[in-house]
Image (cartoon, rainbow, N blue to C red; front, side, top):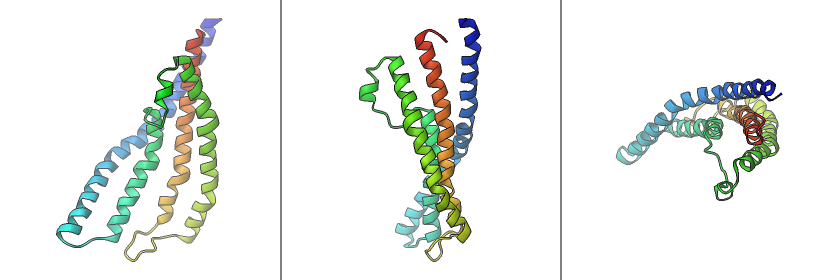
Length: 180
């Protein structure tokens, strides 16, 4: 009977790996965004202090890039295990307890949060799109609605990664139970 269950768990691992690919693809893009963010920040500081000039559009672009990295990078952070965790407790737990706590956290905290964030942001983003919202500052960037669209997109990416992590938790629990 154990041999018949093994392919099912292997399929769950394959599903988790496939779901991971979305976060990996986003991270592959963000690898180029971070240096652009740093260079733009450096250029803005140099322009301000050496040339006594600045650009509202460049400052907003800096905020947009920071938003991209922070929001879209959250799924990759979850995948890499770089998310907030209370290690002072979890380091003392058995692998089974760690897997169980992770499973419960993803299922009952992270996924509902993602659903709430997605749901609550839809009207906000739709209103921004319908207005064709742009920066309120003279010389600012147009299309703020694109930036606001990152909110439900982040919720969706984070939910997909949470599902991948849930699958891994189930497999880890089964391995600890000896039924993998």
